[in-house]
Image (cartoon, rainbow over all chains, first blue to last red; front, side, top):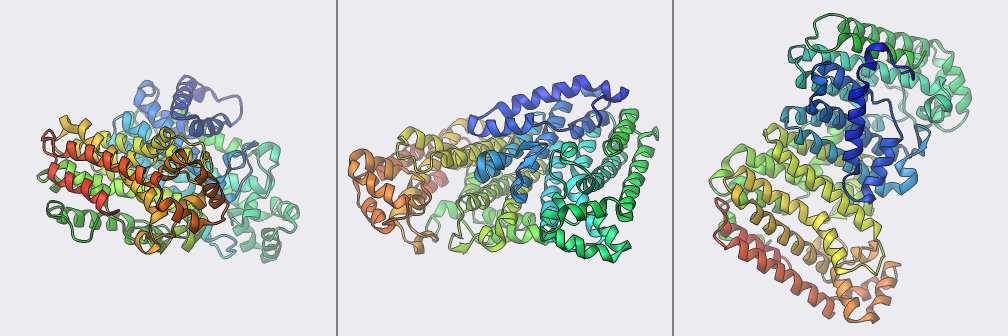
Amino acid sequence: MSTVLPPRIRTYTPWLSRCERRLADIVGEGRPIVSEPARETLVAGGKRLRPLLVYCCAGPTESGEAGVTSAAAAVELVHMATLVHDDVLDDADLRRGQPTVLNRHGRERAIVTGDHLFALAFGELAAAGSTDAVSVLAQASLDLSQGEIAQAARTRDLNLGVDDYLDRVRLKTAALFTAACRLGSQLGASTRASALLSEFGHLIGVAFQIFDDILDVTGTADATGKARGADLRDGTVTLPMILAMRDDPSVTEPIARAMRGEGLEETCDLLSGHSGTGAAREEALRLVGRARQIATSGDLGAADGAALAEIADGVVDRYA
Amino acid sequence: MSTVLPPRIRTYTPWLSRCERRLADIVGEGRPIVSEPARETLVAGGKRLRPLLVYCCAGPTESGEAGVTSAAAAVELVHMATLVHDDVLDDADLRRGQPTVLNRHGRERAIVTGDHLFALAFGELAAAGSTDAVSVLAQASLDLSQGEIAQAARTRDLNLGVDDYLDRVRLKTAALFTAACRLGSQLGASTRASALLSEFGHLIGVAFQIFDDILDVTGTADATGKARGADLRDGTVTLPMILAMRDDPSVTEPIARAMRGEGLEETCDLLSGHSGTGAAREEALRLVGRARQIATSGDLGAADGAALAEIADGVVDRYA
């Protein structure tokens, strides 16, 4: 998302600020030994795309309700928890250009900080008083953990198919986007539109991950806050790789080599200009197009379709 | 707890079996890659002391309600999640005489399995329909993470005081006993007795941990399912050590040496027969005595005081 917010999203700035203050209050609770790394994770930033989805699906009128802010904060807390644990799993030093909790405080505190953020998320939703909301977030958390482990299980597996990839992305990334949309529609006045909004969340979640995977081979550390080729280095097989290998078996060998730590930059360059990466981008754009159709369908009840269309565009813009 | 259950607790066997079946159903959900290590953690056993507390605090009439079994299962799931993550933090190979998830499946799957068990716990409680219950469990989870990290922060710190120790034990162990009692009293008909039952949970939780810490120096692997001296090896300073060093500064040096991996068995032997360990046992017995007073006070509403008294006795018996 560009630094200048599109006009409709901009009207949500007061609610995003409210969410940010609530997040600061929540992570400030407890003893410094856990609140400090939790706070560092919060101030390291992030796009707050998931809270924005909660607000836009709740709609402009309902966004002022405290329960919507609690849901927005809870979704972001689960996201933060996942990032902290993912960095432990991936042995990652940097995230958004900042040292990770793992890097700064060690494995032990990172595992516990993630657990702490999970518990804060559920406590916040429970305090807001909706067991339906807790169920939605718990289901998303189950999906996240299954997605993470599904990814780990297929590390360096160059036979990973498109369907396997999409299944993993649904669990690992899209589930929390879907949950954000569902929570917003539950808490707002769009219950009837809940299925459509969930579908919207799913589509932009998958598109978001595909773009992220493309950026990992094409982007620079300046743009992404992390070193290029992280997926290759970690042995995570992504859609650009799968489609490139399908179109052109000769790229299999450089990918396998890069996963052994040899010729990482060259393989990134090779994939950057490859038709497989182009095809992955086409697929992501197709998903965004379907999401945009939902956003502009006029069937979304109280949800803010115009803002959701801007979010869909923003997912593309970030990678333009 | 001995293998022959005391008479009053025995009447809860049908509910404990129901909880066990519910746990098996819950951990069986999801893909084998996460359900398999979760199931292994379940079948590795455990005393199910926390579910039993939920039932006994709910009382004999209310224990048949599905919500009580959900709460009992959820508390045990959080306990299991904590064990799986603790074993990662402690690099533990064995738990209850069985290989840990860490040992069997590696660090990655162990972290994700713990996250998965946490999410299952909150999903189960939310499905049972009480946000108050979710709040209680979330707060206990926060306490658990703070206790775990408080312990890690004072590793090998031989200046740890009795109050520091008790504070850590309250968070790390007693919080979940307290939560079990609170959940039982909330879901049963003993809301008015909730404060007393929480205090009961706290007292036997702290006593349980003190006895556990004593057993770590006096016990055998046969009795405990893990090697003796684990606390010394991990640098976890416990009440027997604190009281022994306070009575007799000459034990400080052997303890420090054992924490560097030298003379572990000799230090265990030294502490086993030491007056400090005797004083720790006295303290635990004092706490159990107070818990017993609460159990037999007649002020517990629908809660089953007679069964709770047997639980208090059982905490002692295990270490007799």
